[in-house]
Image (cartoon, rainbow, N blue to C red; front, side, top):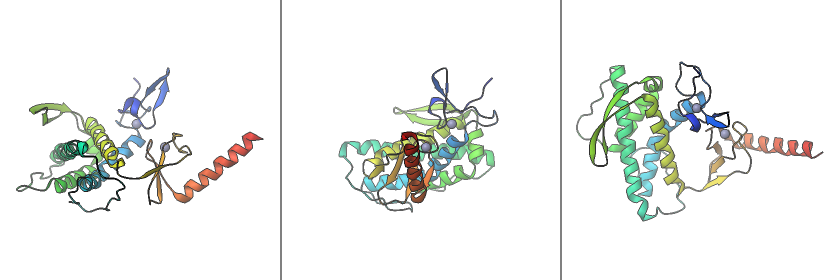
Length: 236
Ligand SMILES: [Zn+2]
Ligand SMILES: [Zn+2]
């Protein structure tokens, strides 16, 4: 049987089969294609900074280190409970998966006393980042979660956890996007050809929001020149 990236139609390197979007064809030993695995890695690495940035838009100040976020607009008040719920989700989910990974690695994972959520998130993400292959290989993990005010037992694989990390990061970016000034660039990404190149205001780095490839400004200029050349050639 064909083995494809677990992200299915949302795979960053998705393919078309009979007009349908499917995950990239990959080696049966892995669960995600390389690009999606890289995106998960980045999501885990950046969740703590997103959490801190969300604190800033709530007017709470930063609890973990990281770059201060430049804001161009205040957060609309009705969004506040959603942002707080997302932050709780970030802390809970990463904590649950870090606990599972710690159990496989035989690491002590209990924390003494009450700790600040931002700090807990930071610690969970560091553990997950350092053991991503263990994380992705987890099978049938049982976690107790709160869903709609009730405690429920859920059974999930590490790959579900990985998708959860992407979802959290995506949501955080969505909320932060309301306050960060992002410039969309008018040329397609050379790697995935999506019109998804973005540059944050004041940043030197350009990033594709579709495949997560990053470009420096000089790479971007070279790309634009190449496109102009191509147009001249086809125009002739
Ligand atoms: Zn993929
Ligand atoms: Zn791309």
